[in-house]
Amino acid sequence: MNAVIRSTGLWTPDESVSNDELVACFNAYVERFNAENADAIARGSVEAKNPSSSGFIEKASGIKSRYTIDKAGVLDVDRMRPRVKPRANDELALTAEAGVAAARDALERAGRDPKDVDAVICSGTSMQRTYPCMAIEMQDALGIEGFGFDMTVACSSGTFGVVNAINMIDTGMAKSVLVIVPEITTPQLNFRDRDSHFIFGDVAVAMLIEHEDVAGGEGWRVLGRNMMTKFSNNIRSNFGFLNASEDPEPDFEDRYFVQEGRKVFKEVCPMVAEMILNDMASFGLKPDQMKRLWLHQANINMNMLVAKKVFGREFEPDEAPVILDEFANTAGAGSLVAFHRHNDGFEAGEKGLICSFGAGYSAGTVFVEKL
Ligand code: CO8
Image 1 (tube, rainbow, N blue to C red):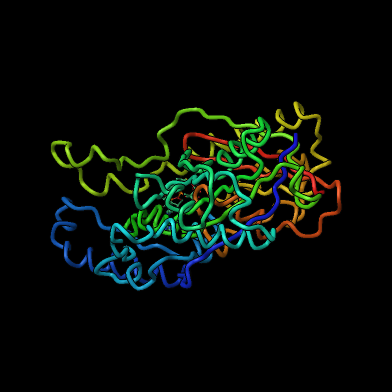
Image 2: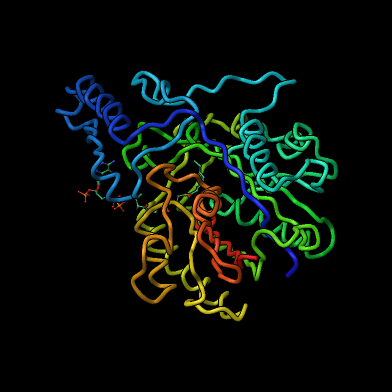
């Protein structure tokens, strides 16, 4: 293949929330709910709510903290959701602003000018505006010519965006494509739901994919890529433009992120391990050639299981790096953020795999070799 991952860039909000801070707010909410509903709870007509715990969160998920666009709103027990200031028509959307910052970082690291880029793919799950198009907003803000488009495949948004960029380069349609994944996930999270209040964080990541002819021998050659999907609504959000006309108007609870976490865990891990091993075989690669796996970042125990199945042995932490402690789950951005943070120490010719998995279900693989 002739596509090269030339550089990556990252944006994070200034503020982060620790498990202890999040749990203190959640438990204050629970205490108040139980006190306000004491009679109904005693009668059995309302179920008492249970407290959350930092210990559970870290053990079950690997998450210690998460970035958020508005810590005060998340930790205000009367609100428990970040404040998002509406943007005027002539202002950049928040998601575009975050994506542009990550894109500028990627361009700067590669020493590239926006004029060098032919196309922008914006791929993610949390666009502030659905149209005209987040990618075109960012293309305009960055001063890139060519074209842009948005796409989403939930957890696999990042890798599917990268695969589309690789394909555009492989077919000669473009020489340089910027994939931008702005994931402002905390406004979609139900901070009053004990099962999921700790899961997500906000971030934006960008990846510059170039044709080898313009990459100047720098970066990571793409050795092979694949995408797979299999329908499941075990992870879903029923939010959408038709909601406003539905009768009765749906409860907002239904529009937040919802999952059957246990089922997801059980169904996705074997599916993705099998896909990785099959893909490796079809690209003529072997597990012992993989120096590092940059896996989707939803849950540390999922990553341990998938990596162990792929390597076929116990492995060192730097062979499958985890960023959940700092970032939590960042939806479609996770595996690209893991790659951005942990791609050091590679000699030319050493190989690795970027792999997303989750909602859809979906999984995407991108095998790379250091130039
Ligand atoms: N505090 C304390 N205890 C708790 C809490 C809590 N917060 N929550 C649950 N418990 C208790 C339960 O009550 C249960 O107690 P008991 O055994 O007495 O019944 C016990 O802990 C175990 O509960 P679970 O079985 O639910 O816990 P698990 O060990 O299975 O862990 C996880 C829960 C962490 C959710 C785990 O199942 C998991 O990670 N599953 C996979 C999740 C996953 O991969 N999801 C994909 C996410 S989707 C995505 O990446 C992108 C989506 C699209 C973007 C959306 C943007 C917002």
